[in-house]
Length: 478
Image (cartoon, rainbow, N blue to C red; front, side):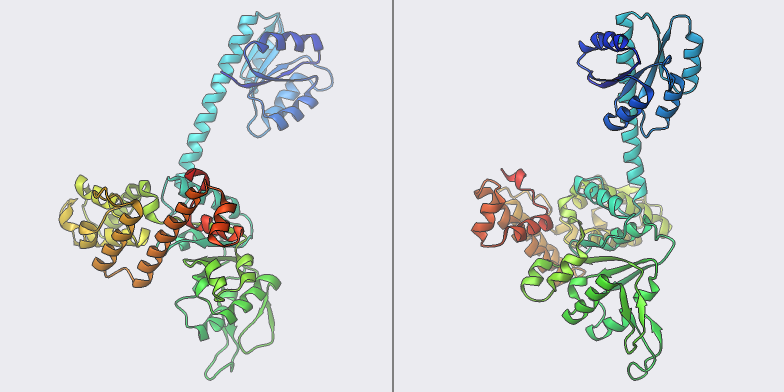
């Protein structure tokens, strides 16, 4: 079993002898002639185990052991002591040493102790990994999922939350962009301050400025002095949802706030400081909006310091059972229902369905079924028509390509589900068509992004951005 070992001893001959005995085991070995040098080596190389001689000048083994144990993720320490000094070795074990080895030692005994320590170390690493995974699942609030795509989201949220960096969250309607924004705020240093959302698509263009910046008395007929969202979010987080729907004139004013961190209320001259963390989200392709002169390029790069993309539910089907179980528990408790589970065939239909409305549609569907069901088991009779009859993520018609299956499924779902808007259906259609089209072109050029960009007559950077938005990995197409 390979592993890394550091040998710490002030005697060169002792280090040589131990190294020679361990060399045959194919370990990654390094040495240190004193405690100070050992600490530096351990910090930089992070060995799995350390053989530490207790009898060393300047910093003795006991002091070295104490300092090693204070390091982040320290190695297992095996103290090496002279024959007859086992009492000291036992004392070292009480202070955190894993085991001890008395000189003169038998080579087989040395190798056995090393193997046992490395096995113990490997087990600890595995247990730590499992604990971190459990903690990860439990620590991300309403974000549910174990797919690789969601793990990437968790990783990015964890990395950006403690900073004030501006984040752009992209993804189709219903994928949970606001939940991600809330999670970033919840894990940030601003958690004890307000999280203020502003949906740019739901506020008329002529009211966005007053909603965001506030108004001074007399700014317009009947206007009263009022704080805007920026002031409400002071020292907290401001979430600009659907920023792609913001008017071009308002975009310039938002850009100024992002750059200068100051603003004025509508109708006023007093400048206020904007001490907020900005998080934005959109379901639009902002690079396309820039090309069509609907979105400022300078604002795009200012809000997109870090880009977190939420995949549609149809691309993370493995997460659907987890979401179903979560929402079933949530709504049975809310409505005090005694529903135990879904019938197996009903659950399978829900897992296979393409969910064009994403997590929002799934959540609303389960809530409706829980409310209307009068039995302990939810069956096919409780399924809405769009789920029962709609095309699934995996159709039985083998003559259709996966893309054709998705497009037909989206059409069926739209026609049979009044909750899905034409706008959302159109966006889902465009997403699937673009993804299939670009994947095909990449395959024609063996995954070469530069050649594909040239064939599509578009800048390479624009294609790379499009690949990120669509969740396409060129390497997987070679």
